Length: 418
Image (cartoon, rainbow, N blue to C red; front, side, top):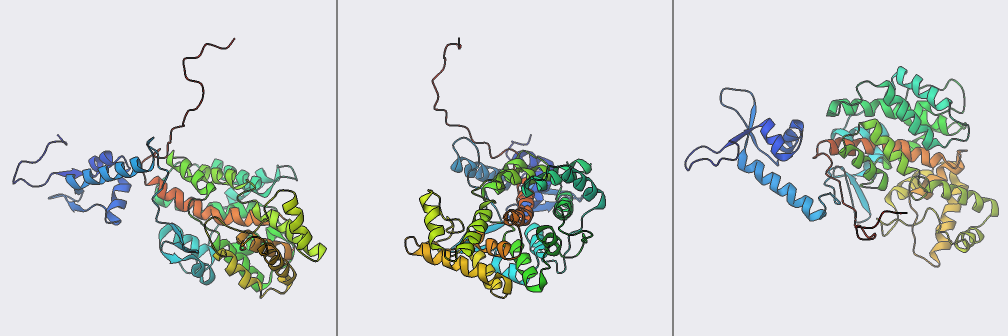
């Protein structure tokens, strides 16, 4: 029996991969992930090719996992999630231990996405949309009302792509990576282009640009967009990312997990924030000064959009990088000055720094993009991060994030209502 202890002097008890997975409550693939992380050691079975595992070591890992769960939630759900993807500390953030701003400046969005997914740098990485998926997604998006928001279009494109993919329920690492590499360019290709016959190949930033504005970008502005995508690819457990991990914990396929993230992203306190900053900058440009605009925002009881971030005491590092790049874009100078005026006027009363929403607003307001463009950029960029978190969650115990409600209603039993 598996729970018998070895006799003194006998060899340590060994478990098969299947037994180890059952004891830990994970898939067999996750057992080997524990080995690669140094959390378990394995050995070949005598005379065979299968791996075996020390029972005492496996049981110790199982106890440690249970303690971590109990320590984070008295109801058996994880409120603090172990992750190897993003770290935010001391006004900086890191992707798999590497400074995220340096990655974004030196590498394309596609390369940063591959780094997030695999931990390997792939120079010249590209994302290709399957023709069949693009055709289905475009038909679905084209059927939507003209006033449909970009996030709704992206969500419909995601659902349509899922319906076209018979392998969507395969949650193996290679299959999910294949989904990611096809889904992101399909989402972009499904958006309406400002001009006809725009190509669906080349850098993703270029393909997305032509879905956001009819103005030709030029190399410098296009670089700003590509860098923005790379900077926004992930930001630890933001609300939308938590929704994605919850879906993945229930073993929803990658398309469904991304759709969950898009649903949360549409909130005005998350992905839509840059649209508010965009409209504010246009108002500042129209009035010639930020003073009356800021006064109107505060008089209406609203916080000034594009300022402050709960995770950074100083300036958002993503904003700092984008502002520096925008200085080299001639058409962005008026909006850049307006953004600096907003920061300076607000600083008289509150020490708030610019965040990435304000930097995105400078890009979108100065390049003929609609106010919703920042939300589109955010959603496309963050999809890569959501996939990275889904991949990580698929390797964890299913349904581990299941907190219980703290009931505060009337105590039962209550009489039946009349």
